[in-house]
Image (cartoon, rainbow, N blue to C red; front, side, top):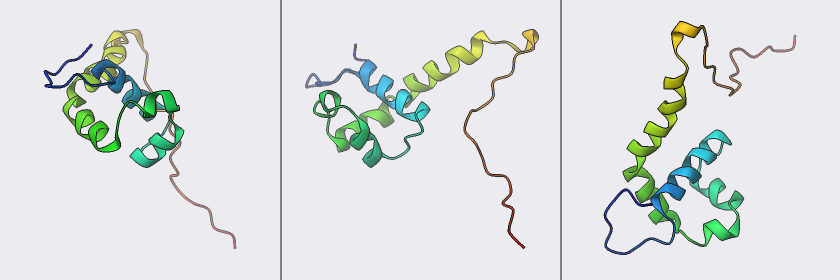
Length: 96
């Protein structure tokens, strides 16, 4: 399924591209270089890095809507809290 009208039909649909983007974010992959190193060949052969980045920026809105969907299902009335699972170093202890 494609969200944008494009002259040429892309080899990787917009929905799959958003899925790759969301999955890479949840896996902690933040660079394009690392993503293309880790991706299976079946997916990486279907898109080029420059095309991926351009389309990813244009599809940002759809990815954000998908991210917000699970958060909307959990309301504050039920006492649930969503916590980011990424560890963050707050302070560093030095040896004396």
